[in-house]
Amino acid sequence: MIYEFEGRIPKISDSAYIFENATVIGDVTVGDDVWIGPGAVLRGDYGKIIVDDYTAIEDNCVIHARPGEITYIGKHVTAGHMSVIHTGTIYDWVVLGMNSTVSDFATVEKWAAVGEGAVVKNMDKIDEESIAVGVPARVIGKVNEDYKKLWTDYKNNYNTFCKRYRENLKKL
Image (tube, rainbow, N blue to C red; front, side, top):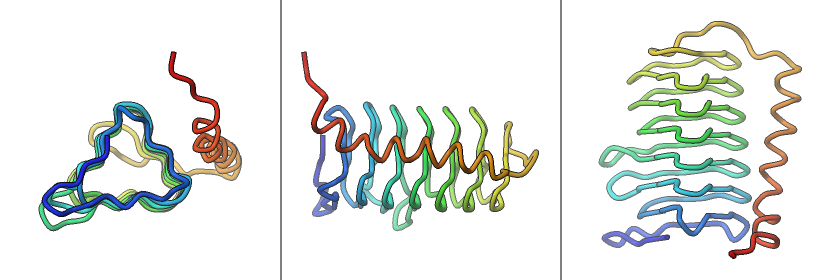
């Protein structure tokens, strides 16, 4: 469901795919070939949300922003099932593991990976190409070239989902 709220109208690329039971409200921009899965909620009611091109927002993610603030999600990002992003900044090629949280004013830089269930606390920063796990999230290593290749392949699969779901998903 896509909603206008108090004059704030979502801007959604024609090539994006949003499940009918996902919710997009207000000042939300969804870029090219963005795939938004079942149950996801992007609520731009008093903050702004930007989801850049080729990103996958998987099932039951929750994305919000504080009043007058911006949640930015870059290109080729994978937000795993049930991730929460609240007034955070996520740069290109990031992987957020399932059920992870990026809290207010936290930053996850390019090609970083946040493990399943990890919590990036308010105002924390995960540096480029770092692997962070735990509560609170702490860096345990660096992303290598094999990881980048594997995740580039996974991300390219999600990029095809927009077209494939539009053409092949059939309600029974």
